[in-house]
Length: 314
Image 1 (cartoon, helix red, strand yellow):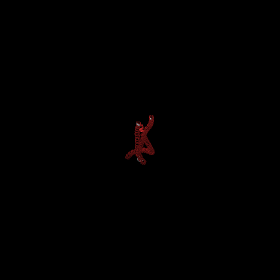
Image 2 (cartoon, one colour; image 1 turned 90 degrees about the vertical axis):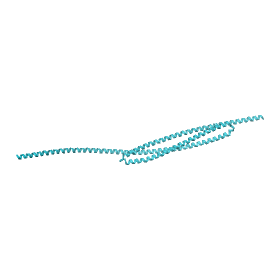
Image 3 (tube, rainbow, N blue to C red; image 1 turned 180 degrees about the horizontal axis):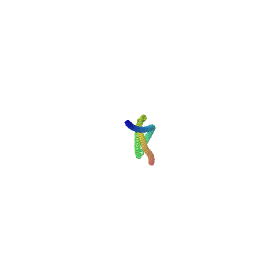
Image 4 (tube, helix red, strand yellow; image 1 turned 90 degrees about the horizontal axis):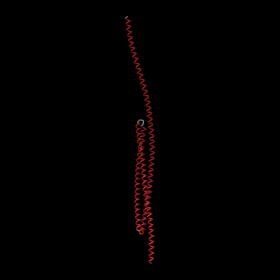
């Protein structure tokens, strides 16, 4: 009985030990299961992060490709803009040179015309003076015979002569005023051309420097390209302002031409007045000759009557 009781106690101890061991094994399985879930969750999280990293890398590569493409397009636009700007400069320079050439030709032609007008007016003055001297000498030669009629006509001739002198003086003043205005206009045109050439020279120096800086540092300093674009826009505005100045210069030149045409028209009108005065002088000279002939005829008739009376007395 004692042995059976001892065996029974041993069996209970073994059963208790096995029960505790079973609990430990079950607890271990639960721990392994939980650990397996954590590992599986970790693998899922890691897989998710790898996918996100792959997507981020793909998106980053796409962004880099887009940025590189935009930068290439920007460089291409900058190259095209620079080429177009150089072509515009060449065209503007050509047009400015043509404009200055036309202005120089017009100036030469105007000076030639003024020289011709001066020569013609000098000839007219000389002819008028010769006609005056001749008329005056004719009046002196016939003054004793004509008497009061001759004196009256001579006073008229002197009055016309004073009018002619005043008209010639006014024409000379107008001509000098035109010459002064043209000299001032040519001086302003030369100054404008000098300033324009200085501006072009400065812009030609600045554009290659800005362009080269943008080409060298565009990958690391994209802001330089933006600054270059702003400077290019500023230059475009300056180019537009230059075109406006060119148009204003053309308008001023056109107004000057119109003013010169009006002044020449006034000179022509005064020349017409002078020619009409010459016609009046010639007509009055013919009347004077006619009166002189009539006076001589009258004297001859009186001499004939005197001869007849003397013969009758004898």
